[in-house]
Amino acid sequence: MRYLASRVILAGTLTLILVGSSFAQTGLRVNEAATRIQIRDDGTIVDLRVENPSHETISAQVRVELVDLGGVVQVHADQDASIPAGSTKLRIALPQAFAQNEHPNRLNLLWYRLRYTISSISPGEPSLTPVVGIISVGEATPEIFELHVAGPTFVREGGHYAARIRAIHPVTGHPVAGVVVQASLDLDTDDDKPLLTRNALTDRRGFATLEFTLPNNIDTDQIDVKVTGKLGSFSADADGIFRENHFSNVSVSTDKPLYQPGQALHTRLMAFDTNKKAIAAQPVILKILDPEETLVYRTELRTSSFGIAAADWQIPDNLRLGTYRIQANFGEGRYEDSGTSASVKISRYARCLELASVP
Image 1 (cartoon, rainbow, N blue to C red):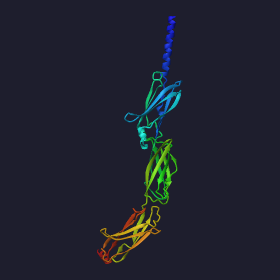
Image 2 (cartoon, rainbow, N blue to C red; image 1 turned 45 degrees about the vertical axis):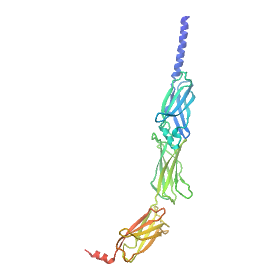
Image 3 (cartoon, helix red, strand yellow; image 1 turned 120 degrees about the vertical axis):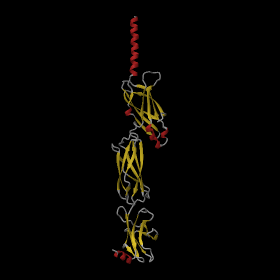
Image 4 (cartoon, helix red, strand yellow; image 1 turned 30 degrees about the horizontal axis):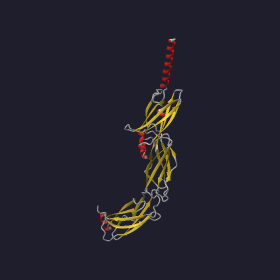
């Protein structure tokens, strides 16, 4: 009887050991590669992917913590969970961290670490060995992106152009596909409505092309461009500048290259824009400067519908001889930075003939 009782006690002890061992060796683990983190303005959502290879549901307590670069826990959250067999996604909401107080600073969280701990729901229960790990927040947020804009430096009225957009992860530098992007161009028009492009999706390399056609009349010299992108609940934007090419093709000429004092100097200006159309009804300031760059004549003109302006200057009889410069510039307006110049010689014909006869 004593021998039989000993066998019963030993069997019961082995049963307890086997039961305890089966819980301690459940193989519970976190699939860090499949874990995702969503950074929002009001907090952070963690989708912790937990793998339970056993055939039993495990009751556990889950804690997640956001740890900053200095090793300080910024925020944490605890949650009781029943983890069934197989793969389970545990969604845990974290409160707003300090870096999320301002929208531009929330991307600082990408440099944080997420520390997780899965332990027994009862502290005295030895059925579950704690599962502990650390995940890079940047690696667990593949849908976070920043935008880069490339386009023409100068644009022209009525021209057809394209802006090249790329979305990349700010930490890993990997391209982000599927981002919906759109550009808004501020043309500074009277109706104050921006020019919007059609939506486009970034490809697997993170690229998208936004095409646009500018109107025929743009008053501003600088077009502000804002590109917005959205993927899921995350959005980002980028700014750029296109400069309107208001430079013109202006020429000024005289009816002959040589004048004598007392004659009338006839000048004519012709102006065309970058599309080779006449610049009409634009103010022009015409100046004539002597060899020492002293102003001797000035007049204000206006171009005709054909882009032409003309002026006559009566050369004084006692004017100093030499090479004079004719300077033409547009007045205030869209072409005020454009202008041109030409040279003309004022001399006496007899003197010129004497010089020509010298061998």
